[in-house]
Image (tube, rainbow, N blue to C red):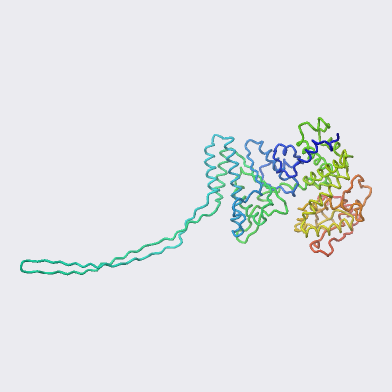
Length: 549
């Protein structure tokens, strides 16, 4: 029986979680993680941002990071998925000022921190446990209880007046004489009444010095290092992000026993904003918080195909192994590592699996999906192993059913124009973008949608001093769909360096240099790209790195 037809293996492949948060067994999540040298860079007490597009493994990384940090007895890790914030109705009430909407989110974060600290103290009490519990009660009050503000609205007085008439009659008599006395008296009275109009206003506020002092005292008494991991930051409304970042800066960063790490999409993050009165609000990247890394940079296939291929083989091997009974792969198929996994699952394993790694374009989620498609297509066709052609078909299917289908109309049109010009006319797959267009919204959205991929940043042009480019490549799915047509890419200019085993040849930067994307991408119907003639000297320079240039 081949691995493809094995029901146990089939179930294991079908059970691979495409999203890390779907994995309820934390141990399986930890066992399937593959580190390319990322953990040592972020398992520190520095405040950091981790960038990466959807599917690159940010959540998986934070889960593993949390487990690694928790190995230190002092450490307490609080993982917060920003998609779960916003319990207060103020968050979605657009009639309220943005500061109030943001405050509701920050209070949710503080509540999560409070609950995690309380759990830690109860589970592992210290000699100062009672003091810490008291401090936690005060922190809860500071977080949850509204501020009471009594305001005197007005002061008024009221005068009341009245009168009273008194009549008296007296009669005296003697034997000979009788006298009658008649008296009349009026009595007047007045009173002044003062009325004070007072209102009681309940408002949500955070007193940052109180929060700072309480957190500092709690960590000191409990001997704690608090790590706050904020995942899915870019799921927050873009207008709220700078204000929430400001609250985080004031609430957590002054406490040297508290570390904040944020996972986000680079082009959907807004950590600071300049205001006329308050100046810069939010987290200043580089000063308040560092950019720890961009996960996309670690999985660019064209930079180091062997390293990335090995990492992706480890990822698939770990995922399948975690879903089958213990030692099942070894006892039945002799699979003890990722190398034997590849040779057992793939025909002509070296080139076939490299093609899969290439098709994933550095995105672990795409790797898993294309592999799953290819596996079950092979099972349906009764193949004993996964063939290269099956991989390319699965990659094209994944592109059309997942990526292309989700594109907004304006993105689909822009992508079509780029494909027609770069692949159709230039017979290439990669192109250069001037650095000044790096922030172009349309380009960013195509990149976030994983239909464009960033190969290199800051590529230098010796013949144009001061001009730098980013190099992008079109998604593998856009490329393979044109194979066998009149627009089929030709590959390298220098045929001696072509690796014929690859369906999609590696781009030669000598051809990339001739294709430069301009701002006209925003204007359908206008010329999208222009050609730059390359001299032999420039062709030679194209093999240099940015530093060498």
